[in-house]
Length: 122
Image (cartoon, rainbow, N blue to C red; front, side, top):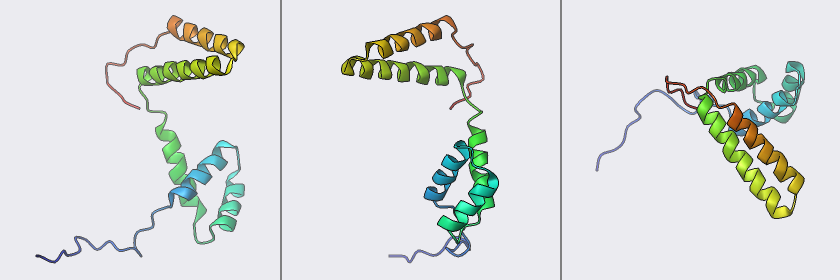
């Protein structure tokens, strides 16, 4: 049996991957409207060995990527989500809420998205 050798010079010390817990929390803080200064302070307090600015840049780049979407995919997601909410509302007896979901679906039907022939995906 052959011995596996390291394929590159990458080591744990050189790889500075940002833990997903940090990325998730910074994303929440950004979406809640925290200032950059607040995020830097909170990050230093919660994760003293983590540099906040690279985390903020990474999260903002991820948020920017959400602007590249396929309108048909988003519309499909909205329709399926509305249908799911409608079903749950009927199950719990929230009929006014269920009617709002029906109205929402009706509004979607009146304004279908123009099909994107380019094939961009979510």
